[in-house]
Length: 138
Image (cartoon, rainbow, N blue to C red):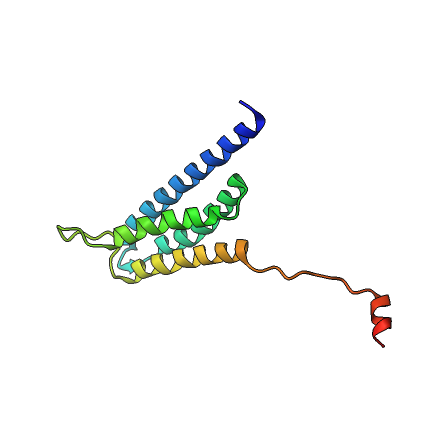
């Protein structure tokens, strides 16, 4: 296998692994929505969703070497969360309409938004002005 072929295989494999990790993270976070300590609801799923989405996006960009990998992890996470938010024919629901359910959706979306901003924000060109340029203006 050529060096270029090996690099492509590593990038594609990395994309598959990161997408699978995003699916697994979303599933685990979804099942943590009803987490309580005593009578107090603890938004553990939301905290994990924010940190996980941000970290998985960074891992994807590092591994795949393309900033578009952020969209891959976000899409995989959203597919699972939207699926688990919908009622089945039997009436089952994984992510309920509760403070913890809303925390998961909001914090996970915020993690995706932060990572998208981090990798897709517009960068202003920095053209340094010299003292010679300023002297010509006067």
